[in-house]
Image (cartoon, rainbow, N blue to C red; front, side, top):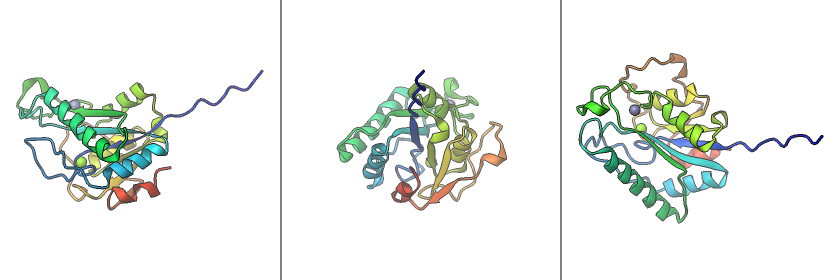
Length: 198
Ligand SMILES: [Mg+2]
Ligand SMILES: [Zn+2]
């Protein structure tokens, strides 16, 4: 009998958006579309190394009533297209967002959900939809809440210091384990990412 071929593993790099792909300018009214110059190249190189590229972003702007969920999604698509146009290639395999907030003003979105990081539901959903092996994947974020989301599902985590890395963790009612607040690596910006993701 022939040995069964080891099935190929899909691996991903999950990118937080604000503070990682674009400066976090504390714009609570709109979606920032102004990505860092190096983003198309770095993400393109990650893609060439065989990673699925997935954006995972908390966007409480919807729960706060400033834009609708549809408007948010079309702005995130616009962001994706701008990056891919500059990079001259398809880059993103998935975009996942959490529109909720525990103190949102829009009732439908005011809740303690599992998708808002430090919750890991966006990563779990992506893993399910794209058949990703999370233990061979990375998460890049600028906040402890990102790291917790990644560590809790066994991704390797990378703290990217272009955002709110020096601020305390976002407020959450979600119970999480303090032992998940570490990062495996820390980088000054995404330009150093290629040294770590293999
Ligand atoms: Mg961030
Ligand atoms: Zn959510």
